[in-house]
Image (cartoon, rainbow, N blue to C red; front, side, top):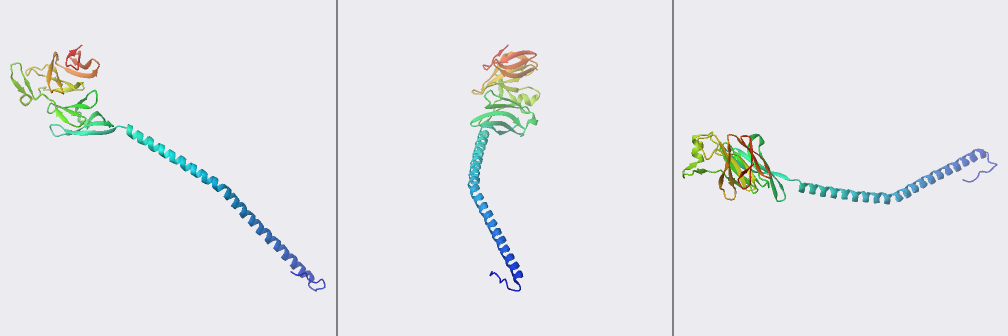
Length: 259
C-alpha cells in the first residue's frame, strides 16, 4: 500500500487504514506460522512413537501366542492323563440293563462300579482291575466281565454228589427258591473267585465256601470252613477275609482257609 501524501486532505484517515492493514498482515502471518509449527511437531511426535508402538504390539502378540500354545499343551496333557469313564452293557436274567463302568487310560482298563447304582447289584473287582464279577441275585448267577467286554456266566450249573448223583441248579431252585445255590462272589486272586453256597447239602441251612478257577472253570469246596452265617470282607495279603459265625479266616489264592 503506497504511503499517502502529507498534503492530502484525508492524510490521517488513510494512515490509520494503512497501519490497520499492516497489523492484520502480521497477525495472519503469526497464525500461519503457529499452525505450521504445531503440525510439524505432531508429525515428528507421531513419527518417533510409531515404531515403538509397533514393536510393543509385536512383542505382546508373541507373548500371547506363547501363552496360548502353553495353555493348549497343558490342556492336551491334562486330557491325556484324565481317565475317560466308559462302560460295558450287559443284562440280568430278568432283562434289566446294566453297565459295568470302567476308566480307560491309554490301553489300561480299570473297572469302577456297576450302574445304575440304585439297583444295588452286588459286584466285586479283581486286584488288577481288569475283571469284575457281578451277582445276579434273581437268577443266582455269577457273571464275569473282562476288559474286552466279554460276559461269561461262571455259575456251576450242576453238582455231582459222591454217589454220582447229578443235582442241577434248575431243579433245586425250581423246588426251593430260598435255597442258596451261590451268593456273594469275591475275587481271591486275579483268576479265582470265592462264593458262598449251601452245597453240598440240600436239607441243611449251613453255608459253605466254594471257589472257581476262571482259567479252568473248575469249582471246589473249601471243606474246612462252614457256618450258619458267612460273610466276606477285604482282600488282604493273607487272602480274602471271611467271617464264619464270628470266626475269622482267610481264603488264600490257592483256595484254602487259614486263620
